[in-house]
Length: 151
Image (tube, rainbow, N blue to C red; front, top):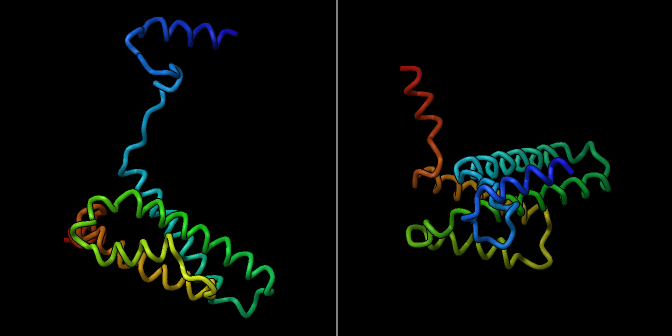
């Protein structure tokens, strides 16, 4: 009850808001840089886990391996889709072939292919896409920063 009263007072204080849902005006939009880094962090983590499961596939039961690889593949697909949709507008005129290849793989897929081959192919395109993002200045080149820090 007390929370509703304070919320109503805030609404009354700011009468200039003309939106349909007054409680949504307090939500701050995330900064795109931090969103991009969180997507990349999740993507890199899922790719590393996918390759770890691929490396130790002989030591894991087939049922649990299939489940884990499917989860990692779906996570990689989700994260790369988010990264692609977040950055493709600026890159469409610079790298149209790479974007076309990535879009075809992401949204059309390849029916009847092995999930391991499909995800490995997607990881190769992701590597190319991340290099493109570095070249275009979306991401800082950490190697250069480390070299400058050592000098």
